[in-house]
Length: 230
Image (tube, helix red, strand yellow):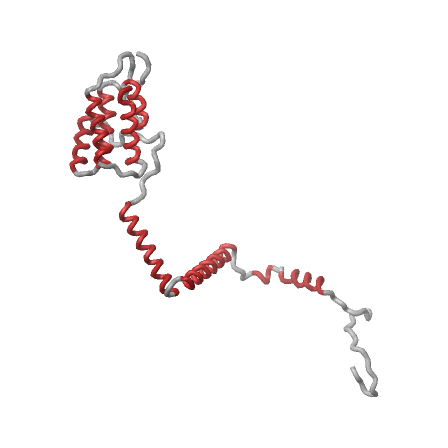
């Protein structure tokens, strides 16, 4: 800079104590600023982890719907119409298919769940359901009639907690000519009871025919209810 007298002097740097120039480079300055900003006092009002996650989620959804509305005919209004159609379709499918059923049967699922009844009682219940075209219930009751009849004839030992598959396997040992039909009937019972399937009239008629055929069949000589030599 120029001073009185026309002489020029250089701008002197600030000096610290001891007349030593203060020259702070960029890296130490940045580190000092970071240490200062890491003080908890500066972060007392910051959002917590959950709030930050929710903020990121809403930002992502906003970007997603913004992009979707940009490519949907009609813009945001068109996107709203599409979403309403999707919701209506999901509601219609739920109404048509009904509520979800149980997962497939496990080893602990019992064939009889409502106390002991005779084979005649189960057949009467099956006939009532069949007359009303309630094929799921008709299949269930007719399969129970099959197993109860075999127990009443001492071809199966009465055993609480027995599953349809177990009954079919045990009865097939003493009635080998009907082993395949017994397995199919047990599978039909499991499908409608645990698998969420819907039975039809032919399925029921197969189980009904099996019940009638078993009534006229005698066990193989030399076998007990468990299929072991007598």
